[in-house]
Image (cartoon, rainbow, N blue to C red; front, side):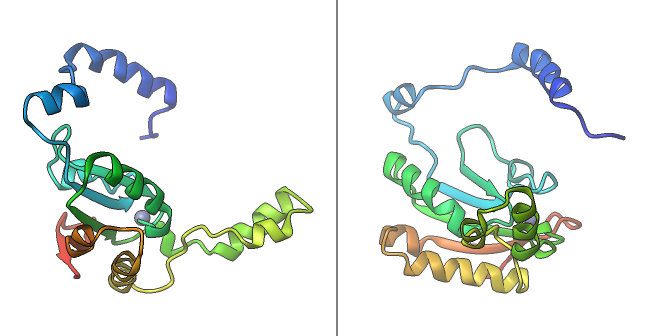
Length: 177
Ligand SMILES: [Zn+2]
C-alpha cells in the first residue's frame, strides 16, 4: 500500500483533534509541581524507528531528537538549547539496524548537489550529511565519546549518557555503553 500523502495525514488530524486531550503548558506543568522531561533520546528520522512506540512514551515523558542516522553533531544544537531550557538529566543515543545512513555517502550527495547548483563546489565540499561508515555499535560508541568530550555539556548530563542499537526486527534495544 502507498504511504499517505500530506493531505491524507492532514485529514487524519481532522479526526484526531476531537479525541485530543489538552496538553498542559509549561506554566501549568510547573504550577502543579511536576517537572518537564529529563531524558533526551537522540535517534534516527527513519519512519520505521519510532521511539514513541519502542519506548512506550506518553505525552511529555521524553525529549525526542530525530535526524538522518541519529547524528550526534546535528543533534547538539537542539540538545544544548533544550537542556538550558528545562534541565535534562540523561541522554540516550539510539542507532538502529538497517539504517539508511550506512548506505548513502557524503560524496555521492555532494556530487548530486554540485550538478544541481554549479559554482558552489567549495560550499558543497564542506557539507556533511551524516554518513555512517562503521558498525552501528561503533557509531554509538563514537557518539558517546563525542558527547563526553564536549565542553558545552554539563557533567551531570555526560554521566547520564547511554547508547543503544535498536533492532527493527526484534523491537529490542541492545545496550552498547
Ligand atoms: Zn536510520
